[in-house]
Image (cartoon, rainbow, N blue to C red; front, side, top):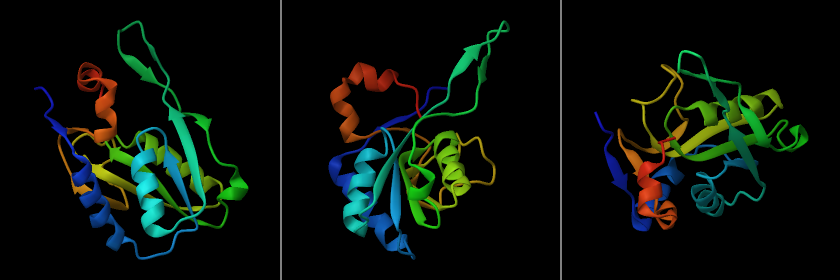
Amino acid sequence: MPQRTELISWEEVSQLIEHLVPQFEIEFDAMVIITRGGIVPGGMLCEALNILDVLTAAVAFPFEIQSTGSALYAWPAFIQFPEDDQLRGRQVLVVDDVWGSGRTITAVKNRVSAAGGFPHTCVLHFNPYRSLFTVARPDYYAAVTDAHIIYPWEVDRGSEKVLLDSPH
């Protein structure tokens, strides 16, 4: 069954951010934005929450095709990640646009924790129907969806590219 696609406007993104802000009950010392999807919502949230230490993480999940034709996924490859001393002992908000499978944000959360930080995950959209985790979910999210979300900053990539991209 084809997955439903939903185009989100800039106004809707602003409303999602406004919905998130009152949810935060603690003050964060730093933010880790997951590239590329988390850059825009992370920027909006760091302004709204006055978070000055903004860091980035880039993660890839390499895979190889097995002789059976199925894909074998490897451990995450951290292409870019903050140094441990930038995270140790700090309340860190980890931001991405969507929790689809949950692999990327969970990998970042675990690495922040391993560095001695206290990670809190945040996304605009949570898709529990695609999540690979039965219990884990984002600490903060603005909306639940079953759709492939196309954000306004993705539209300029060309509709044929956006619509053919695999969901997160």
